[in-house]
Length: 373
Image (cartoon, rainbow, N blue to C red; front, side, top):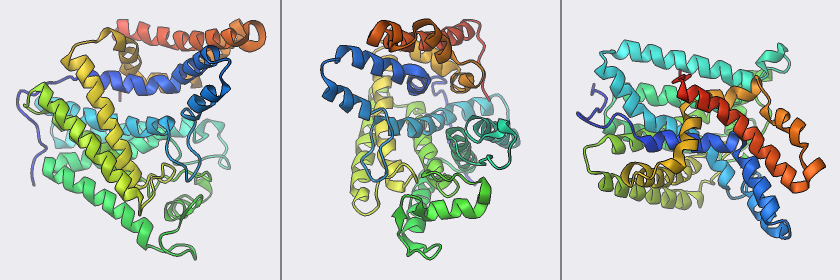
């Protein structure tokens, strides 16, 4: 059995990964509201432009082409994977064996799962009729991390590539070839697909009744994390930075093309995380990582990214913060949206809400308080 691939003397920190994590979280914790409020102010007389930009900040309906907002969740899983070669190798160099790493993986998966149930699974309602066991991005990350971590601990880079291909092809084959519930094989419709069927078989009344699927889609989550892991290996390699950049761009473009071609027979669909979607979105993740790596780590233009780095340093806190403090409600009490100052008030309220959260995260950053699992 081959050992995990760890390059000697490889860099232990890529700032671009931290910044990209914060960039991704920025949109969820208020960045989207700030941008849309600014768009509403700048393009007040151009409702068509407002509508076009607004369209990018809402998940595309079933069957329609993905938009920017549909990239947020895949990017989370991808970044988790990108950081794993660094974190795993660091722990190995600290003397942690495979047993300790397995324990770390399982503890992290358990914590993420419970937090996901709190965030969107209605766990704190203490109502079994409302409880959903698997329905959240954190749980998708947990599943992908578990799959990617186990594979990474037991294979080298070639094995990880093979596992990625196997997961993608297996999930595609299941969706395409297995009939279910009286429906013919290959049926992929909203709430009528094999992934949805498996979820209800496994979780029964505790299953997510929405359009998103989770249990069988975990194969796709694992593939997305593994594609991120492979980007981490690129960045940890001993090639010079510019060659790493070219490799990231080449892989990104190749994955986008592959996803578009696969889409002709296997539709890109985020709701059930089809294999073509996993490949296509990973391509864009590679290109985003390449841009951040170019600007931050190669050209060392870093000041612009500080706002993202602060958010990314405590991404889990940022994600769960509204379960404790509603910064948007506090800002609303001050500015009252369009009620007092029109669209300017909407912008000020959005900015204030984000700055309240960012200020708390900045305080944690300066005090070197980092909540990680």
